[in-house]
Image 1 (cartoon, rainbow, N blue to C red):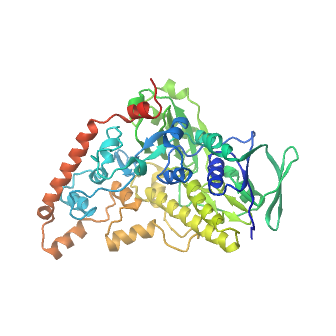
Image 2: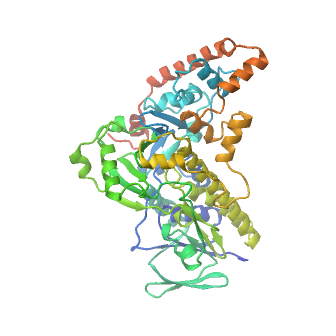
Image 3: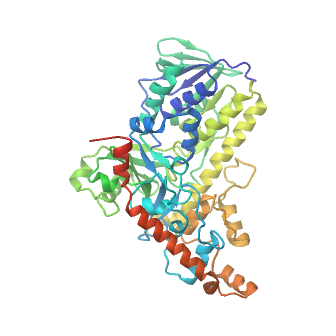
Length: 530
């Protein structure tokens, strides 16, 4: 049991470390919190693209949105686009944020599948356009606060996430939130760690200073210095479920900022993985996630360069421009420690586990695990039961998301390279990691919805990804049965709804044409350039 927590020491001063310090000092202002910031250890900087959970985190801290955006190179994110994941050359589809709008429909999400059956040439990308008014904005590179309610229930304060510089976010939290509230900084490097039955007994810094604490938080990245290193907690690899283990990353200067600063993260499937494109205010963050089982790092870098020079980019770069870029080689540790809270050590961020960047989960586990840590600590003394509850909750979060990401690859029908051929041949076993006692939103969820239920859950991301990749939960067989049982013609029965929905989409599109571009909105309201 950890009794009467008074001191917390966070080892690691990247974005995970300062996000941890900020939320702990907010909810536990009486704690004596220190962050060990080593000048010898660079930060990874993973997490420029975020999900809506970051808004909950910012809400906890009562952060002023405009202030933090201005200082973190931030832009708004309305969606994630997946290009060429279904088949090479198949184009893209969006997974938007927020709540679907059912105006004009008879049966909510089912309407689109009826429409697809009647008009099979409709692209799968039309699915998100039918239900999300924000689609009219991000597809035209526009932005609106929707003060007049033109875009239904679209609410940017709840339905829009951020692109930002994760390193700058950590620094901003440090300078503007943590230090003013009393968090201490220890500028040194951990040279040795002494362990005992309680966990970490003390840290010995390189100049000989000894650090003791009631609770240690491991934010040391993939090194996992405390949890994996000192305590030796087992790491469970997810490489059998998730195919990629390396990445090249670079920063790309804008050529046409107004055109390239898009309101979504673009993920483009390539020959041996996929490339991300994340527009922050001052530049593009881009990279190539791949498997070195199928391509060497140098060949992957060249494939990535070819992508940057191709029409996949809004503004393709020249050979001279891409050769002049600085590329960072990242080796990813994909998986999670079997337990992330052991004795008096809890790991947050990469030191706990990492999935891979698809679906923008770099900071996801940070703010979600912190949510569960705060719930645990608010109860007071931490017993083994409390640790078990925490570990079970965080494992479930991680496992569910890992399976969701894995399903993106399973849905694909690409077979143009050995990488994609091996992907198609992989057997997906959601129980392989033996981490959770329950079935999550991956394989079993999809097969149950597809084979037995055919009911649609708008709050589950799986439906949006499956539909974008032509894996329709409701198909022609379902529709034939519906027509037979109800003695109706779907085309006749749904004609009025089809018309109303098209009118709705047209109204959204025409309204968005009059809005500012995202670049102009940010320039006027956030970053305020002349």
